[in-house]
Image (cartoon, rainbow over all chains, first blue to last red; front, side, top):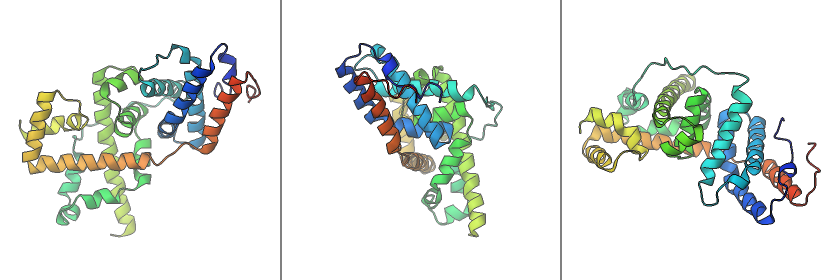
Length: 203
Length: 84
């Protein structure tokens, strides 16, 4: 619980009531998005809670320097990502798997449209409808962290490339390549789970 | 613009990150080309499914309460939770 367990008190000397109310509104507004992102990053509820608490603590610490009217959501996500990198990635470094094979943008779409099963029914929606929440979560959790961070920020939270570049402190081109590779791997995994699932259910 | 170019740009187009003129070219092609339209529709639906799934996860009430309590604590100048 290093850091996350400390109270807000020790660093709010001289901070006024108005700032506190503004900050409280920010907690209410962004708690769910930050928590679900922390959950995607850490994979565990208790780790996600610790990470979110650490994030709001760090944010409160630098709230004086936060400019009213600027992008609060991006600011908080940047703090979250930095806290995640500090807390978790230091201990167990994950390989970036940069030598990954390029399987093409529409791996999944091609598979679905090309499979007799789905094309005979004339409806790839049949595939989409069978994607289960647990498959999505598992596929995301298996992406290497740098790809997962980019995919979560873009595809779940809807940040722009420029915002992601600022949040993760990486160049725009790196944002695009990580998103690209992450999306490819995600689709590959979803196809594999769908096929496994089909065998198990005996369809 | 041909299918190959469109497919290369499709994700960036769906992300609304293309220049206006390029974006319009992709849009025109997708409207006219059944195969590219299928890919685009599929990718849109897939993203919806992924979003819907992940947005089901809400912060636990306990976490919200803990954060607000920590804040309230600091407003009263108390220090009760610092040893937490």
